[in-house]
Length: 167
Image (cartoon, rainbow, N blue to C red):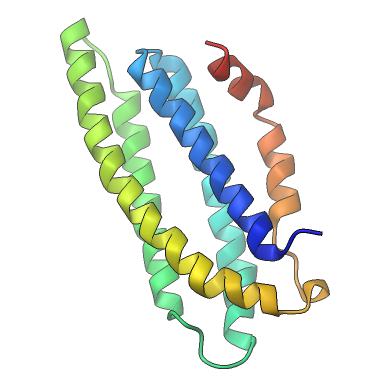
């Protein structure tokens, strides 16, 4: 059986894949599909972060010695992530105009993607080294890591992902 960190990292990798599919659609100027994928990504990412904040982070504080990273690091990064994703959704939804305007809008989005992905790298590192490592040490029957419900929600987007992957 996979550890909590292995299951949570698998969720992160699938989120990364959804974001990459969104970027590929932008590259191909499939704007409607890119927008749909980003919406699915947002929904699933926010679901994951909500479970972390309501279940996993409170457990993290109860597990024993002081956590490696303070809770404010995780919640502050979640707040920044939410704001950046909402800005990406708004900007992606506003892409339009002639071909040149769309190309330049996509380039601007890729610049924003780079900044966002940099934040995600730091956040993922902190979670793997702190939160996920602590969860691995906890009795598995003591908590729900949220991954099973997350994968159910993810499967609701299978047709969209298949459409993007074969486009």
